[in-house]
Image (cartoon, rainbow, N blue to C red; front, top):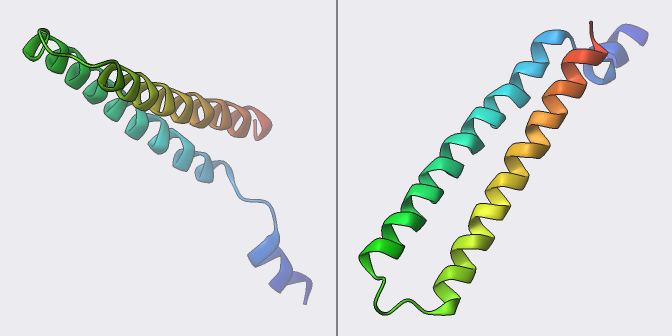
Length: 83
């Protein structure tokens, strides 16, 4: 019974930290894409930009940055705790 519990509920190895590293790269990629998209949109529509467009761009950028930062923090915590 203890083997069963350790298999499904026991601590994971250092290899499982790669999950957070993958998510960090994933969100960094989309963070850069969102930033480039926002800059492109501003230059393309600079004459008739509404405040809602800028607000939406900033909120999406902030959300992606927060996801990137949280996953980077979790990767750091995971890898340092398993040294």
